[in-house]
Amino acid sequence: MTVPYTLGLHPIADSTYAYLQPNGSWGWSNAGLIVCGEEGLLVDTLFTVPQTRDMVDAVARALPHVTIGTVVNSHGDGDHWWGNQVLAGAAIIASDAAATAMRRDRLHQQLAAPGPAELPQVVVEMLKTFDFGGITPTYPTRTFTGELEVPVGGRTVRLIEVGPAHTVGDVLVHVPDAAVLFTGDILFVGGHPVLHSGPIAGWIAACDLILGLDAETIVPGHGPVVGKPEVRRFRDYLQRVRDHATRAHGEGQPVLRAAQQMNLDGFTDLADPERLLLNVGAVYRELNGDGTPDELELMGRLDQYTQPSAH
Image 1 (spheres, rainbow, N blue to C red):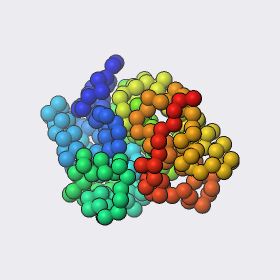
Image 2 (image 1 turned 180 degrees about the vertical axis):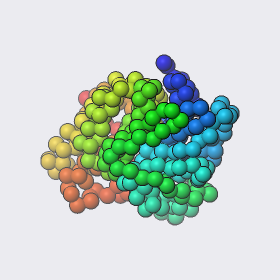
Image 3 (image 1 turned 45 degrees about the vertical axis):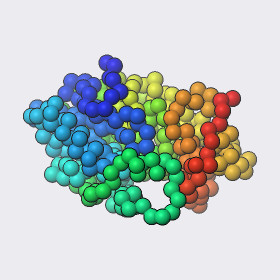
Image 4 (image 1 turned 90 degrees about the vertical axis):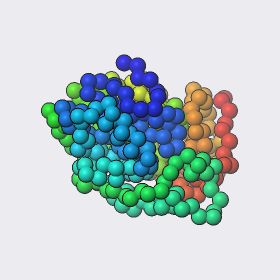
């Protein structure tokens, strides 16, 4: 099935839907819906309260008989859970690690009332685009580690913890009876990803796990609905980042220079190229073992980054 990459709710299998938000860049995340009878399970809420209300309204128009009784947050990035309050009456599930990260998160407060410090251009653009006001953090009511099966009517949804990878608490949502997988930010399509926690080997292993699942239709955290070829390409990207950053670190190259010198042959079409600095920096941080270079410090240097040319 070819799913158009347009804003809104799209059927992707029997009683299974993707809610897509082009263009998939900073803050424009996807969500999913699994339905059986009158019961619905929502995979992720969105970056803001208005975005999430728009999504819930779209579900109500298309499926007026469905009540969303369960929400799964795939991880602790704000664009996948800051809208939870719109569904505060539902059971909200996340990995234990993701829930801990959510409770420590204060970024929504900083974005709602940014200080006078100079901000990276990507943050400036997010502040122009998104309304971060009125967010009341609404945390998971149930957590788990490893794997968890969740019933939705007569269907079974598998939650598979694969973090730490992109973040400390990443979870895949597998719908076996539809051969559908919602990956959260374990998969980005059409743009560079962001490696927050690592280790990068954990993210590569998560891609290998996806390739071994019975999943024909894959909904990434950002980007269009795809299949396994795009997962293989994404794994190749991560391996390229790992190998280049490890080599550059061993040579003592500064992280900014290392990012600018990476060979992007085969990946020059990816959007958000400044994220490569964060990804190379995350590998450096893992190799250093002392918390450096700090991710927030690297965010402040994004405007210094220029994309390398293909070799």
